[in-house]
Length: 324
Image (tube, rainbow, N blue to C red; front, side):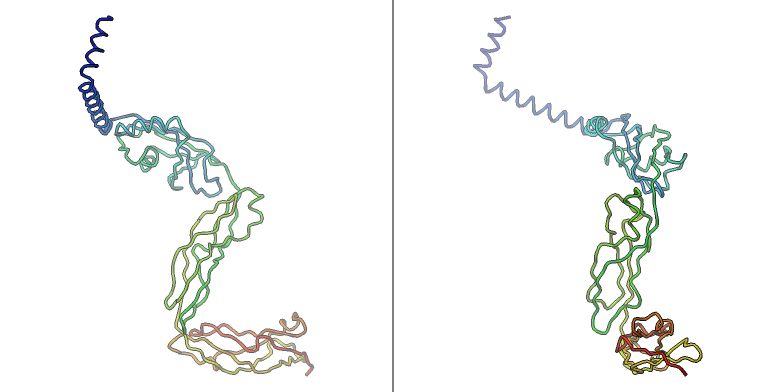
């Protein structure tokens, strides 16, 4: 044996360069062979633990348990190694469409194999090719969660080109959302807000999408809302209108000072209405009785079509009650 080792050592000493080349060639050939074989597709039965996430009404967003999902797949050798390693790590969190989750009790929901077919890439990876889904049914538990419905309040700034203005208020869809969470986080919430957004240089109606502000410890039935703001060109018309008393009891009178207001109307272009003939300013007697020192703000009836908005000068009027 010692003679054989002496011969090998002697050969390496005399032919060291050739040996190094041989070893490098061998390693290169082995690497090419390995990469080639790992790049091929193979049939493999794979099991992956899955934790479900979904926006179910009245339930937590994340399931409290995980369930194994098993399928026969066509995978590359690389993906098989990666998938086997994944089986020993934390469960894969998969987002399921609420319509695919069927209720089976107060907190238990299940998916059938046919529905799992739509989530193959989410569960097993982008390169997975499904041969057969072996899991017939998987079940997840979504604990019941407190909830309430609250309005959505847009937070925005709008600037318009000269002679353009908004027609009505900015609208959001949906205009309310369901908020879920523990009572300590849920009780103080009576509305949710959009993230602030800015609309500038408007001359046409604006439409878009905006995210809602997140609140710690809570989740919402929607995280995004659509907004729309109707914009129109306007013409400003200034008129002087008398301010009248309304609903004054018999035998009483309401003296208003000043008795005439200057009103600036913004009318949609082209103008189709005469504000001086169709709008009346008044102060309701009940507003006077509930006022501080007889200072009241005048009202109008519903504005006729074509009038977008108006401003009144002065804004506050002095009122005194008299006897007829």
